[in-house]
Length: 441
Image (tube, rainbow, N blue to C red):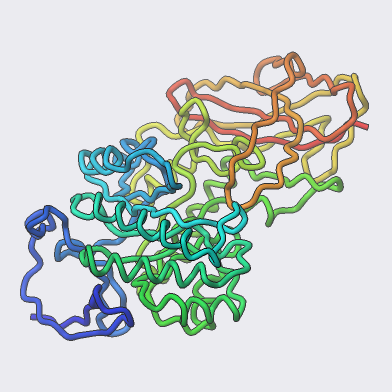
């Protein structure tokens, strides 16, 4: 027999108690009478472990609201986390689909944001939010695909009223009272400023897990957690390519986006060098984004294209989770040039003139490649935290492909900032991409 220290999910201060376990039954045999599979956070010596149905459970996940879930399972993932607001679609179909595919769900409970007008000094608004969360917990708590609760997404981003953290802690206590079989967390953007560290420690002691979302700065996450003195296990609920706020910018302020291949390499580096290297405290991770969205560009964060094409980032996750590469791999981007220059050279073009463009790509399987080009105005979005953005319209007829990765670009007549995109397809559902910002003046 081995003795472990279990976190009592119903204990607000994360009290520890010693218990004896003599066997590790299959998770499906450990369902409660309600059908839920119990999940707990266990500490043994200096190591934290997530245990589901009596079995250690390392989260190998990605972020999605359910799209491409079958691809996630086929790639070796075992879980996904979602994002939900008040009025979001019913979560039961998402849980049912996860169960069908052998996946689990870290279910998001929406929490109001000050930047969207929520007032944490309004006790009636806070009460309604609490009751909505309670109704959601009662609705989903017995589902066997439920893994844990994420109470709000980045509630610390641009907050001014620390009562938001009191509200999260109250919801966590409620969950432990009415559920008791699933851990609680909140997904923080986490600046690690002392004020926020204090709020995490003092205002949210009931949370079982601290969850953090980092991009380029994730390499420093273990050090930040140690310096903060937060003696709790943590999850990485978002990681991905270098963020648009973290990259080099052109002289006119356009962020320079890495290619699909550069992003794929970054996913692998983070997973191996940070998340897996610190598995004694990190319970797992969710890659962002197992889908597609517009956030500064239509390609920055999505691991898929809008048409559903798989990119190299998915290949890298498949290799990390399953130990081998997928049967067909995605095209790899090696370079993109406009007027024989690269993005870091602050490309300025004259209006209405034509310029050459060239994309250099290769396919690991030797598949013939086709190219698609488009030209868009630079996004002027100022949203934060993944709030919805509009996709800048493509300029028709601005780019003419000439085959073998070459194209001719007609610079727009109107002065301003633009971005040239190239998409490379292997004809088997896989693609690579890159883009290059430029200015017309």
